Length: 414
Image (cartoon, rainbow, N blue to C red; front, side):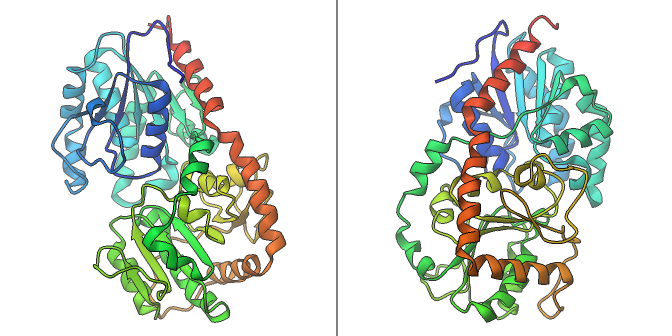
C-alpha cells in the first residue's frame, strides 16, 4: 500500500458526501492509497462501504437539504473545518461545494488547499447554477493547486481565470484488479434481466445524464430487437419524469422501490444505486452514454475495463479525450465517429421531450448505430478488446504517482 510521505504534517480529504457518484468513488479509491488522516463530509449521506471511524461530519445536512441553504452554509462549513485540521496540513477536496469550503477555510487556517474539479464548469453550469461561476472565478485562483480530471476541464478553468501554473491534469484512477473481482459476483435476483440482450447506462438520474433520449431511442430499437432490455443504474431528481416517460412510451418498466420482484418480464429496469455496477456491465451487450456535459466520466472507463463496447455523446468534456485521444479536443462530432476506443455521437440539445414527439436526427442516428453494434459481433469484439487496453491507462498506480508528485511540489512553497 502506498502512503504519501512529505514534509507536510497531515493530509485530509473533504467531500460533499459519500451518497453515490463518480467523484465519490474516486475519493474512496484514493483513500485506500493516500491514507489521509480524516475524511470530512459536508453532509451525512454515506452509501458506500467505508470505515466510518475515519469519517467526520461538518453538519447535519443531507442530500435532501436545500441546495440554496447548503450554499449559504459555505462559511460555516469552512469555520468548522478550520477548527478540526492541523497547522501546515493539506486538504484535498472533491466536488464544487467542498472546493469552495476548502478555499474559504484556507483564509482562516492557512493550510494548503488542493481542489479537484470533476465537471467542466463552463458546460455544466446552466440556469441558476451559473451563479456558481462567480464563486469559481473568485475562489479557485486562490487554491494552492487546482487539479482537473481532464484536459477539457483544465482549459475551461483557464478561461475562468485560474492561473495555468496552479493547474494540473490527473485522470480519475481505476483499480482494475478490483473491478475484475467485483464483475464476477453473482447477480442473484437480477439474473432474469439478462435472458435477453441488455443495453446498460450508469449515472445519476439528473439532467446532465440525458437518459430521456436513451428511453426514446430504446423504444424505436425494440421494434427491430424485441428481446432487447434497457438497464439504468442510479438515483436522482429526474426519477419520476424518466419512469413516467418510459411507461408513456409503452415500455414495461420496473422501478426498484415499488416493491415488485425482479423478473425477466420487463423492457426497462431502473435498479437505483448499486454498489457493484460492474457485475451488470460485464453481462451487458453495450454501454450507452447520452450525457449533456461531463468532466471525465469514470463510468465510461469502468465500462471499457469490463470489456463493454461504448457509444457516447461527444459532450464537453471527457468522452473525446477517453475514446479518441490525440484528436482536437475543441471539436465535437457532427456525425457518427467510429473512434479508436468507442463510438462518438453528436451531442444532444438538452431539451426535455415527451413520448409523442418524433425522434430528432440525433436520436435517429443513435437508433441506427446501436442497431449496427447489436448486429455486428466483430465490431463489438474489436471495441471490447481495445477498450480494455485503453482502460489500463487509468490504472491507479500511475495516477497515485502523479498525486505524490503534486504533494511533493507543495513542499517549501509556504
